[in-house]
Image 1 (tube, helix red, strand yellow):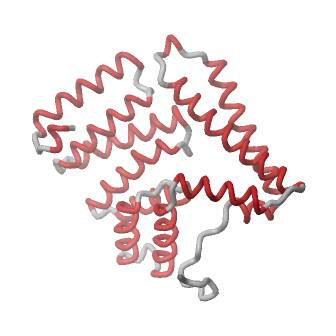
Image 2 (cartoon, rainbow, N blue to C red; image 1 turned 180 degrees about the vertical axis):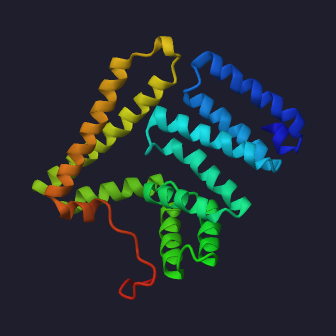
Length: 246
């Protein structure tokens, strides 16, 4: 990475390739560490304008990450955003736009990548001006949020819910969310081990519990739609005259 930052690409490339080979030998070709190495090498190729080679590596990195962690895992956003950035550099906005739409829906869009793609998509009549404004504004709002703001929001939700059945729902949902985050870390720990040290049964049990937690949260949301508005308020809509500014 140091050599790449210095523009010493011929020095950097064999080290990236060596790193990739080590991870593949130690963990196997489907390990998240391999995905990271592929992504790093693809970044180097992108810097050199070797777009065809970079695209293949980004796609391989994406496939490995999705297989190991699942389509909706936050770490999958790295190769997705980098692939969209690559397409943007090439002017391939029709290829980049579906990726931006996906990362936007998952809340993982990189605004530095998304904004130019959205604007260029309007220029090529892939989106109209209203869609570009709405998507850009929502991505900007997500980007401006923080972990501290999320914690304050959760605390506010508990207080606003009062002490009745809705309050119990708030606590239950937030506890399930915390459990899901813990389980997610457990999955990453599992897949980070060499194949010989992994337990397929244990991994399956954790993944099953993750799906159960998702289902429980969905049931709670369906039963108490008011809580959805309380715990996850909708974004301010661009151009909504009824929304006060200040």
